[in-house]
Image 1 (cartoon, rainbow, N blue to C red):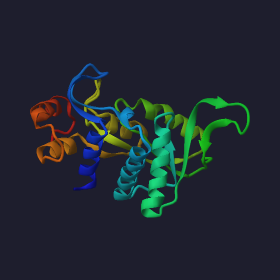
Image 2 (image 1 turned 60 degrees about the vertical axis):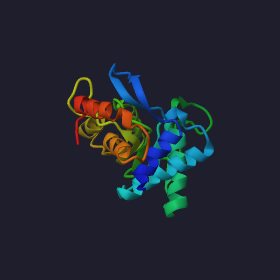
Image 3 (image 1 turned 90 degrees about the vertical axis):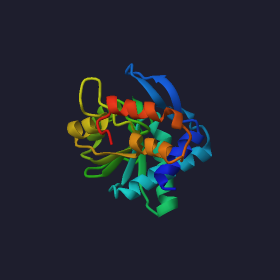
Length: 220
C-alpha cells in the first residue's frame, strides 16, 4: 500500500476516521468524521509522526523548525521532528506557543527553539476546518521574528467550501497568508481507499460521493 493508504487504514484502526452520520460544527450532515482526539498512545503518536515526516519529505518542504500551535499541535510537532531524524536523518528544531505570555523565568510566548529572522518554519496541525488556528498563530510567529513560513502540514484536507465562500479553508489560507497547506490525505484519497477496499465502508460510498458533490471545491 502507499503511505496515503496506510495512513487512512491507520486512522480507521485508531478510531480517528469513522463513517456514519455526523452533524458538524458548520451544521452540515457528513457521512464521515475525523476525531484526532482518539490518538491516545505513544505508539500511535510515533506512527503519526512518521506520516507527517513522509509528507514533508515527499513534498520537499524546506524546513528548519516545526511549530506546533498549543495545545494539540505540541505533541504533533515533537513527534514529527523525531520522525524526520529517525527516518530520514533530517535534523530540525521545534517550538510551540503558550496560551499566555510567561512573565517569569525565561519568559516569553514560545517554548523550544527561539525563532530568528528568515528561519524556515513549518506549522504542524491536525485538521483545518475554518483556518482559525492559522489566523491566530501567524501574528505570533511574525511578531517574534521575520520568519519564513514555508508551509503548514495537516492530516486531512476535507476540501470543502467554507460557509461564506467558494474557497476551502486550505485555499483561503493561501489567499490570505500565502501559506501553502499540505495534507497527508484528502477526501478524494479516502473515497478511493473505500472503493479499492483498503478500508471498510462501501455502504457509505454513495453518501460520501454525494457529500463531496454538494460541498466539495474539487469534485474529482
